[in-house]
Length: 309
Image (cartoon, rainbow, N blue to C red; front, side):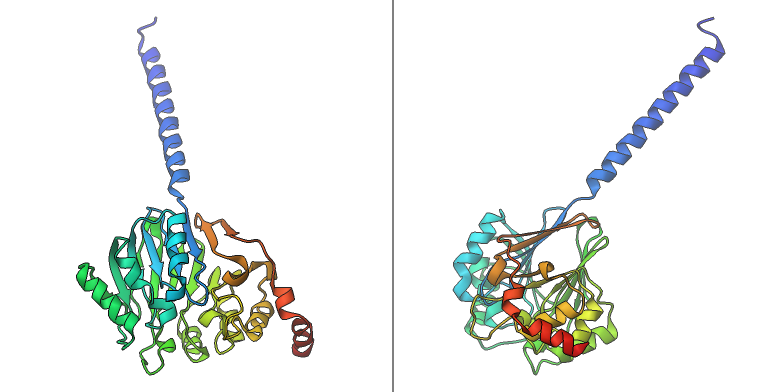
């Protein structure tokens, strides 16, 4: 009979199976959608540093601001990447090539919070930065060794900092961004002395290494690079800059540590470079595709590799 108990039990089972399938499908789709993308862009600010982190929930974090000479380029690139608000502005140390544009960013662009390393400077750029924070009522905090930022979807930033303020470069905030299996190490302008402290006290293994001090030979020691073990290296340096950055010794260290030449990017030759990840897969897109390192090194790579071998 149509209205027998067995019939109703059968209908109930079909309904439960259908409901279970529907719920599993929804959770699967939500799981697929939850793997939101995190983007990090090394902005092209000439001989300076500026990195834009776009978190999975749309939060924008800017690390350093480049030198005053790159002000127009910086503002144009922020417009290119549709940055209408900076939720967190982090200044690694108060040298002009990292802090100079903070004042000019704060007024045209809404800024939620500002973080620095607590080091006082007599420079005009530092004074303007403090003035802008005060006039715009922007909360300002000092990042200390061991501080964390928790971002969306399990991403986070970890801060470390030398306690020695005698050397401004060595007092740079060092930040490690983690999102799933992806990680990136931001090194400011630290020297090999601080690099040694870091790899002796921290886990540094990272997918991407932001070359310290614009690729200087006083940084980026072979032991440090091996400790980071990066797949990609990002170098922020101006074309034909007076310091000769990136130095060939550092580039050779990257190569000897196993970094593929095509995975070494420099703003001088590649323009701005964006890395996108869902925490598992990684995609790197430079403004200009250019494997420049062979011409830059010339014969030095072969001679030193043979010598080291």
